[in-house]
Each structure stands twice: as structure tokens, then as C-alpha cells.
Length: 437
Image (cartoon, rainbow, N blue to C red; front, side, top):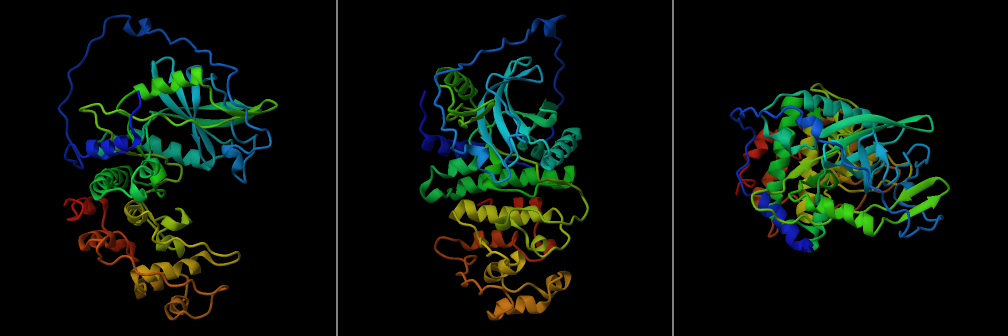
């Protein structure tokens, strides 16, 4: 059954604001359910399906496909998963959903639990897999009444699989649907209406409040690609499997290696009373620490100033990150996007964009950094010190205008501050006037 992508996108935000959001909720204890003897034994495993070994498009062997395009790609490092393969004697691969810098993602059927799951198969040496496992282990160990725990993707299982003497970490997750990045493409100018942005932000703030206050985790990688909507209708998963049987995925075959083209899930159809909700995913860059941290994190365009200038940082970097994401969703542009030339200092290159929007940093910030005040003064005056010329000053955007209401600017400035301690927490932002208007 076809469903218009535009209608689906609109339904996502309509359904997500159907009920008031709270940081915490307490539930009455559920009644115990007694199952008849032998019930579990009677739940036999689903049969293994045989997928077509012909009838698919063959991609030219000289064409780089998906993960092969990464400069660091190695056929030895990425696991050569096959459609129809059985992982861990339990999860049969149905099709490839996507790929990342160090992993591939597959829709599978859990033959024991009789349900669909997603398998993320990591590279042989992937430190992000270790971080992700640590984060999920900490989250799953918490007994919490916080609503934010329900807004994070769940890890259902984890194990290692071997290939050519190398081990690959595999994470099993619940399936999720369309992401923010895909959803943006169905709105004019790739920008969301304010009512949808507010709903998304409220969900993310609840998730962040849980991560920061209860789990002691800093996500460090908030972006549109890492926010997916929950699935209301499992029919799209069944449709995916059936399509794989009748129209197998295209693939590139070189000897024993097979690289599959990804196939996205279909469009979720509205199910009354079962709204889709934004869900935060990917803890591969997460830091499990309540203490002060050090080191480089975050994509450059989302990077908090204390990270750029090699200062200690804490969970407030996620708040800065959320501010940049908010602007991106509303205006389809990044506030601090620049590309340094070869040999140019990234920190020195990022100063002008931040100064253009936020003004000169306070003396307290400068004193904490390893960069002399002259470093900042050079950009304020537009004078030397940099291997290349100063980028052309950009018009200030964080000011009230016809398209940028004053209360929205005030909301943004609660997240985008030079001093991390001046940024509001997720709980404080949840009560913001613009967000609740």
C-alpha cells in the first residue's frame, strides 16, 4: 500500500505531539501473568528462509559501492555479510539498511523471538563499538522511571562473529524508521515547521536529561542522521522482506566478496493511538563519565568552543551541539561551517564564525585556553597571524528578524555560549518560553 512521503512526514510530527511530554513518569505495578507449562518450549523457531540467488542487478566490479568509498575501507576490516546468512544461530539477514564509517546495518529476523531486529556489524578494530557497548551496558543496568530512557535506541543483544581469524562486534537493536535527515527532504527548503521542531527538541531534551543526570553519559554526536522515528506499523518490515524475495537488492560481486546496495524501509502508515516518536541512536562516540573530559570530539561544524580550544569539557557540549542542530533543522544551514585550508589551524579558522555570531569571548574563556588573547584580537581586527587570509565576515544571524522570532533567538542563546557553565541544562531548556509556545 503506497503512502505519500509528504503525508507521512507531516503525520510524524502531528502524532509526536499528541500527548504532553514529561521528564519522568511513575507507573503502577503491572499484574503478573501466569503462562501455561511448556509454553516457551512450544514456541518453535521460525524456519530459515531461502533468498533468491539470481534476478538482481549486478554492479560493475570497478565501481566503488557504499562503504568502499571510505578512504580507510578494507575488505578485511568490514565483515562480508550475506543476505540469507544466519548470525549467532539466531538472526537471519534479510537485507542491507545502510552503512557507516566503521559498520554496516542489516534488517534481520530473530528466528527465536519471531520478530524483526536490526544488526549493526562493526569493523574488526573499532573503538567506537567498545564505547557503544559500554554506553548501552550502563543504560540497561539502570532501573529508572525517567521518560528519557524510552527515547534511546535499545540494544537487545550483542555477540562477536569471526571471519578470516578476525572478530567483529555485532549489536542487535529494535528496528526504527525514517530519520530526521530523510524527513527534511519532504519539506519546503528542507526546513521543518516550528511545531515539529519543538516536538523533536522536547523529545531530545528528555533523552539528554536522562543521559546527563542518571546515566552519566555524554552523547557528543547529536545530528539529524542520529535521530530516527519509531515504527508504528510492522507492515513496512514485512513489505521489506517480501520485496527482497521478489526484487533482490543490487550487488557487486568480486570473487568471494559481495557488496550490497542499501535498501531503505518503506513509509510508515499511520496507526491511530500509536504515534511515532523521535529516538536518539548511535552511542559510538559517547563518553561514559560524569567527570571532566579531555580530547577532540564532535564533528567540526557542531563542535563546542571549549573542545575546539582544547579545554576540559563536560555534558554541556551536548547542549551546544543541540543548539547548532536546532538552527540546522529550522534554517537548513549550519551556523559555524568553515573548511580550513591545508596546513591551517582548525581552531584559528573557527574563531571568526563564532565571533561573528557570539561576539568576542569573555576574558575568563580566553584565560582558560592555550591561545593568547592576541590570537582572538587578530580576528577581531581582521589582521594577520593566520596562514591564510581571514574569511569574509558573515552576516550575524542570531538576531531577531521577520523569520527569526525574538523568543527563538533567546532560546538559542541559552545553548550557544562561550562559557559552558552558562549554558542551560536539558531540564532548564525544557521549560523555555519559545519551546512551549
